Length: 346
Image (cartoon, rainbow, N blue to C red; front, top):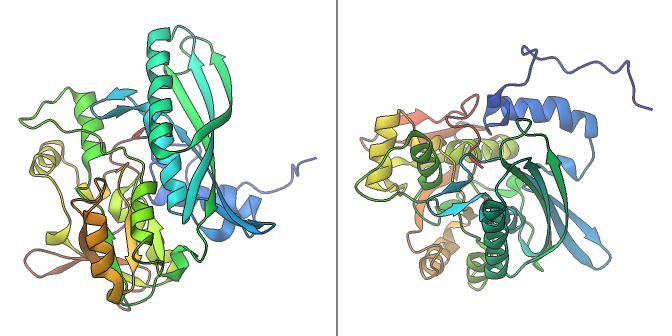
């Protein structure tokens, strides 16, 4: 029996807001106060992209995610391949080789069979490219008007690479921060699709599975401290979470962060900050300074990392915070926003 007398976590909000699912500070407070405190256990408290645990002689990673992106079809992908790639990447960020995925579908009555087939086919193609198998699942149909076309929930299991121990708590002062390419493509693509905006250059989602990129990185270094995919809330939220977890400072260099000119232009039109915009094929890699060059060069040889760059470093200043050195040499605090500039991004 559950405890009816257990107090409800204190919140200034009487109802859940869209911002509570946006990956910002409201999300963190909801997760921390409502879920982590109540479900409290060592695996959950890892503050990772998944749970990492020992089973017999094997070290495994387990992750789960739900996808509610709107629109479900967008330039560069759809909700189906996004679900597979996102699950693979969460396992990658645990330092694991992705193996198996489950897929559960919540479908609104009246959803076109042709669209469902497109989603399923894209999931199959993405799984084959990543080298994973979809091994189990579930299907539910809700009344028309009680859903929004289709939602997908996934879970993934992978085997942690021998010798790897990835955790946001392990970043150290002096660590170099790398990213594998242009940021904010996915969020701007989704927003543009919703608003019906067109640009001279076609902006596409960066949805991509990153396990093969990790394989290449591991061929030159296994001394990786942190891996994190900056999805909801973008680079700003991801680095703030790491800084708070490890109680260190993170400094980013504004002029070194790769952003497409058309994405910059779209952000100016839409009033968005690319540092807070979601990515779906990007990974932050924290490595010791002596190994950064080798890792960067290897990343740049992979199609998923050809535009990789060094964008920051771990420091002892401003512990628990993220700062950005601007193009004119000043420093500003890059805080975690309360919600999400764009809801239902993944």
